[in-house]
Image (cartoon, rainbow, N blue to C red; front, side):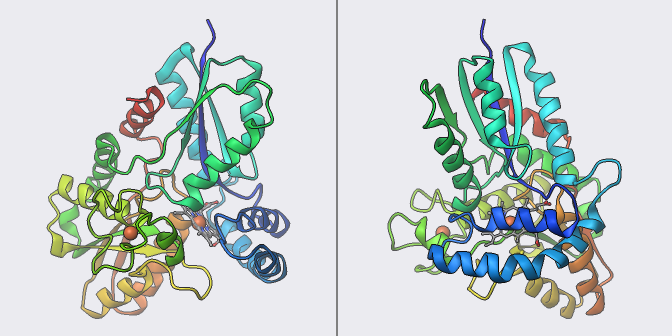
Length: 339
Ligand SMILES: C=CC1=C(C)c2cc3[nH]c(cc4nc(cc5[nH]c(cc1n2)c(C)c5CCC(=O)O)C(CCC(=O)O)=C4C)c(C)c3C=C
Ligand SMILES: [Fe+2]
Ligand SMILES: [Fe+2]
């Protein structure tokens, strides 16, 4: 009997932490019209002429900080573990493939492996809990672009988002509990940032996101596809699971690039404000990521920690990502089976 195909797709990482590979990665990533969603001529000028050449050597140094000699990039390392654990969980009835949206392992090769094995259907799981056009949308776009040239297009389905999956919420909460939430003055839920215009473009009513006060603080039918609203919902659910009162946590957005306004509040500003308020110890969840990566291991654990300490804080503790947490493999199993 033919197998069912599962394709896990995460964002991608450079092939090595050396400047030429980081430049190649940034060029592919940032030339994606869903990531830098501006006029293509301007995007080419900005990315190829300014961002990639100037950022690559700096980013390469950061990647060298998090790169393990044995395991390479944490993002790829944990993604491979997740693939193996899911394959074990699902058994022989399924073929689980892993790909990265940018660089390697490629989506194209993973799809060909599924095609060569004559899988019955393909379920694509973009590994981003909250939907954004720049992440989930881009994976969907790429997969559809590749299969459109096939003579036989299989039954193919996509997971759009899983921001409120109970087992994933429990997995984040379990990881947080290991640090003892009561040992911290404040908790941050720091999500990857997004240019504000991308939120506005995803607002099908054209009247809600960033137009109504507190537009995205609560998830409703009107904003159910909004990245910010889904992020708020994930944070609320983790906080409820851990019994963290509203006044003890803040939702914020990190990793801003460029000068355009991004979704607010910015994590860097919140970290500075809390330090000035006299908070000493902070626990930080990063629930936009299902595997540790540059944005968690370096940006939060190193960069924000240093900034916090320079302003009088004592310590920022990162809650490790879902990585190999069995509860998260439960989540993936449910998504794979379409529960
Ligand atoms: C316009 C720029 C960017 C948008 C929009 C964006 C959205 C976005 N990204 C992720 C997940 C990850 N991003 C990572 C790194 C990263 N992101 C950007 C820019 C945008 N991201 C850059 C330039 C980088 C590279 C790092 C750097 O040079 O500072 C990563 C980490 C990859 C790794 O190898 O560890 C992840 C994961 C999401 C989910 C998202 C939309 C919501
Ligand atoms: Fe990013
Ligand atoms: Fe919104």
